[in-house]
Image (cartoon, rainbow, N blue to C red; front, side, top):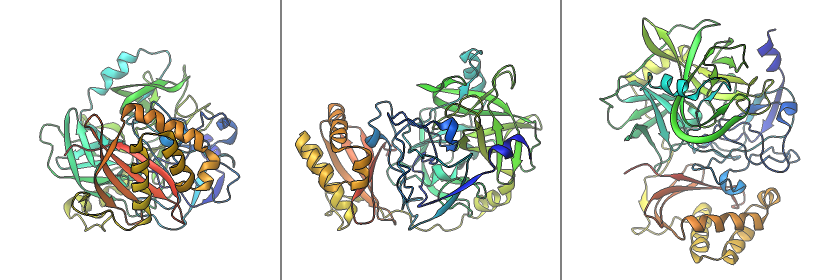
Length: 469
């Protein structure tokens, strides 16, 4: 058994698997909460997201909690929430996930910002990584969160856990300043709602219009070899192997690494500290989920893998030296990619058709009742209204994680950014969640998604910048 297999050999089964919503790269991240998790000791899979709340390990259902509005993280522009009954907007009931990790321990929830980027060596100039990324223009940003790669004029490949999070109001790709809407999402048939060893964390996005001014990158059809050099690209926050991701600047960066292991549906790379590793050693960081791993084939770039998860390994935190990067194996599903692009199969409806609130009353659902109560309370503009909303509408278990007072303080900070939020349209997910397009006080639009637990109480609210109309 090699070193990587030894690190990844133990398994633990958890109930009520979280569905990664928009970066929803779920799985694990260490916490910045005062109850900090010693991640090096507990091990575990990191998601592509910055630190957040730790999840109670005393809860028998091992549920994940939410992101930004739970943790009050000021740097997050995109919120990810994870919950017991979501995924693809469709995940229902309980699922089990065998999470490969070093040992059992405390789980953490996601707080993520859009496109946190490449993490680099501490002894190399950042400018070199920025220059490297310029050679890979087929990489794109995905709204609400993630990275993808143009592999045909009308098709982008990304991670399944990124693709499953697109909603009617946040569903586009961006090349530079150009934004193109996504027509349909195709998740690999093996995907069951969260990254795990036996599934392919890969999705195809069919675009509403072809991208004519960017040259697509071909996929690799034959398996790479251990030791082969790959190049990752991503944009946004960055840091070094010593610090992990620290800042966000929205700049594309590239980094290289060598393939350590091929394990069925996945490739693995280790972030080696100097003097080991490549000259521009690095790995993708939080928010880079769905991003490409490029190799050279016939003198041209080709995409061989898709960014999925980061495992603690011997690292001191997410995406630090010693952590292990896991990428979905494209050659293993090349036939499915070809078939899907040639004859796209009909997909089940994930969301209802958007409805203008001015044209129709809110739907008679538990999520709509909570959403209306939230907007009424928020727009009242007082702490008292938000305190009443949190006390009456929030699930009691969530309030054990973050108090009513802490949540009220968070909403107070949000009102300083936008004193009012005006609901414009809504769309209902098949799992009972509700997505609402809202207009902020400055005229910008966001998508708010409300997720409930059994019994109709609020678990989380996700807030994303909306795709351009």
